[in-house]
Length: 354
Ligand SMILES: Nc1ncnc2c1ncn2[C@@H]1O[C@H](COP(=O)(O)OP(=O)(O)OP(=O)(O)O)[C@@H](O)[C@H]1O
Ligand code: NI
Image (cartoon, rainbow, N blue to C red; front, top):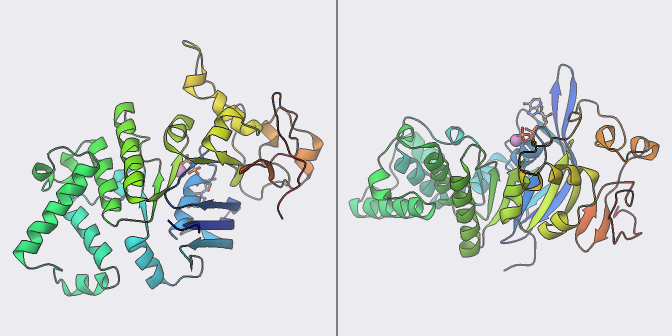
């Protein structure tokens, strides 16, 4: 195990230029992911979670990274050329999307698609040329058989039963949960150092969701893989994550270990999100939602993004730039009004880092 974080994101800004103005989708985000660590990103719809994730793998187009740094295992992703990015997508980082059909091609068999991913992993640089020449990487039949076994093994790892019988199925022959598992197998075929999973279980029912989260956790334990797991559901995050980033309006409002965030939430937004968890709602009580709307990210106002919806907000919150502060070892909060929320403890006087 190395002490260096696998991923270091510093002051990342990703914007979209639209006719109505510039959308500040990710606005000064900093975080790290250590080897073997599962970091969760939680926040309401539109808070910038997906744009953040896509920026990490440099799929932010049509957005633009306007500022900041993303260092992945020593490579500066914001400056890397296409070749370096292709290599990193080949075997460094892999991404799983909410909709499996973003990954799966309906006209190829599931097994073939996992096999393709294995090939890219083994040969990230030469892939384009081989595709162009239409040369199969493995012509020898023994090797072909071995490769199919490896694909079946991967399918088994992600919980697809009877994989040898399912290898030659097409995606439409798979159920939603099985398709999601297949995309996980495609991602894992590359043995990524970092798996970025954007709402991988949102469309699935609870038991399948739990099974997939178990798999991710198990693979982290087995392979030492690092994971960035995105969800709007605190329940999912609490289940598997070591550390949590709470995102709102393109910024990180609070970050800390899962325990710190769950047992000692300091930011009013984090508290509001936790209050909305079904687990924290009485039976028969309707599910709570946070009053008000997510902010307009076009030409945002100064001050705290959450201030318009925050019951503790003061003039200071609206007028000033907010810096995050350390409230406990590794627990940071971007709120200028710390201490106003009942039950807050342990706030250090230390000002922001920068
Ligand atoms: N292609 C685009 N053009 C313009 N704005 C965009 C584009 N893609 C995303 N945005 C904006 O960026 C902001 C962040 O979106 P993002 O998809 O990252 O949110 P999210 O937190 O992932 O939400 P959800 O939970 O709904 O997936 C939103 O305001 C969204 O409208
Ligand atoms: Ni999203």
